[in-house]
Amino acid sequence: MHAREPRIRIGEVGLGFALSLAPDVGGLQGVAQTGTNATYYNAASFDAADPYVLSDERGGYYYAYSTDGGGRDASGRGYHFGIYRSADLATWEQIPGGALPVDDGKNWADDWFWAPEIYHNSSTGLYFLFYSARSDANARRWFGFADFEEPCKVGVAVARSPEGPFSNIARGPIDYWPYDPGYHDVNRIMGPDQTKPPATLEEGRTAPLGVYIPFIDPNVFFDDDGRLYLYYSRNAYRNWVWDYDLGKYIEESNIYAVELEADWWNDAAGRTMPAIKPSYVDANRGPDDTPRRRRDGFVRILDYERDRQPWENAHVNDYATSGGTKKDRRWEEGSTTVKTCVDGADGGKENLYYLTYSANNWQNPDYGVGYATATNPLGPWKKYAGNPILAKDPSLPMYSTGHGSIAISPDGSQAYYVHHGRPSDAGGPRKLYTGLLFTRGTAANGNPALEIDQTTGDRPVPAGVAPYSLTASKASSGRGTWHVRWQVRSVSGARLALGNPLNRVAASLDRPGTVTPDADGRGAAVTLGGQGAARLTLTYQRKKASGVYEDVCNIVTTSDGAQRRDPVSVTVELG
Image (cartoon, rainbow, N blue to C red; front, side, top):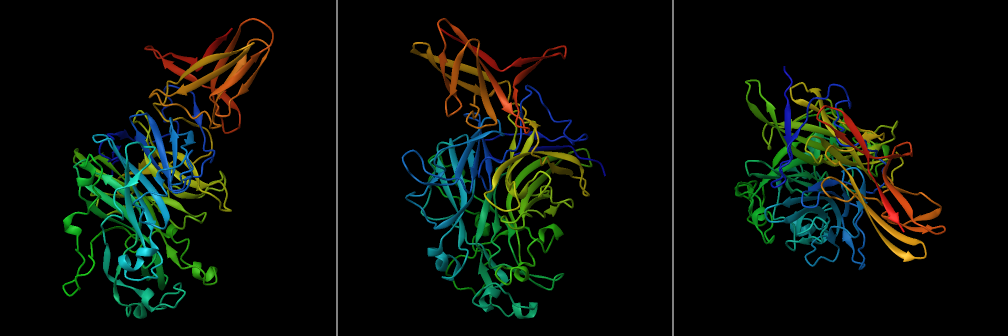
């Protein structure tokens, strides 16, 4: 079976990213380093669970949105969801506040504000925030039981800036009521602690049929034929599945999908909530069902029963090991879908879809990432036999790796998987990590096999960030004192995060004096000793994993192939 060369594109309308992921034949030796000697490493500096990365072509920045990290802005207003900004997809700074105001006038949820994803429509200028949250107040109305433990749905907010603030479009979640008519709701015959399911399949089948599905972790895929798909994770809660190998029930989360109408995306006013296609509306209502709430349909994308992989079994014995305080569970969640064009066996082109997902409990060191492929966005999907492609690695150390998103380098030649993880197996906040996503060889079905460069060592910055520019301004305070401000920009014009310790501008005087850096890393107070002029030399530097700072150069390649290294530096005349 021959290898198939892929061309992968993020399917968001208006982004237009295209990427060629060539099979990597020599590890990281084939990674482009055009333009600069600058490197980055994963310093695990920011708390950013479930990060979703948006490339904003208007300002040249990347934005990472996370479950945690929301705080207060300068006025004291509180926010859900942290926002981080980067000029190079590698060094980040946090935007004060967050994405969705806590006091939004159309708030519909109580807690569990999770997994934000933002999509930009370049035609209308609008940014759409999809997120999941829980509303105990609506548990009975939405799911039929006041004590329903995980009454989760998906909301949508809108803004005209990637930095928000976002406002809920409606005073409620998406009008979608997924219902599983063939499920025996065994919780209704379980004990009051709701942790121990029936001991036999026969007993479980005595439970009433049908359950409304709570769902989280939205991911919208925009196919290039104009069709839109909402992928989501069915909560493990109220989804007990009989495992014939283990001879017991396991409570599982699975990945489902539904097709969306496009009206909301095309509404320039941003007032239309996403709606599901009519073919899904009430699709799971039986002929004898009473006409109360809708019973909407869905498509199964991934579940353990149809595609079993042992690495997803880290928690199937938690009930016994916890002394009955935890449930036996599995998870498939946090998905991201991209589309690929590959060379087919007949010489033509074939569509291929990749879906990354996370499995196991996010609180546990065994949280990891796998992927599946399909030739249609609604499947059937097949998991990669080599999963997981991202997992704990004590040698780095890196644990609890997962729930990320795929981002493209500034020049479109590379893909990266931006995810969360922990530097310790003892728990703690989930941190932001970035790893190169590339192909090496082929899977058993002939599709290009994905790999993630999981490392805390030095790596080249993403291709297309350079050349860098360093500029400075000065103001005299009299009597030999000056205040100098500077900034470093990428080729797109985005400012580097100089408050991040991975970046710095080193300042040196050619005569006696003192240089006192500003707290934000973007300037310094300079006091000269004695009379006369002075020269202040500024040089942009990047921190290596060893802790040493290295001068950054723009690498200029001439027409004859020779290279010239130009330091990113400027001299300021004082006096």
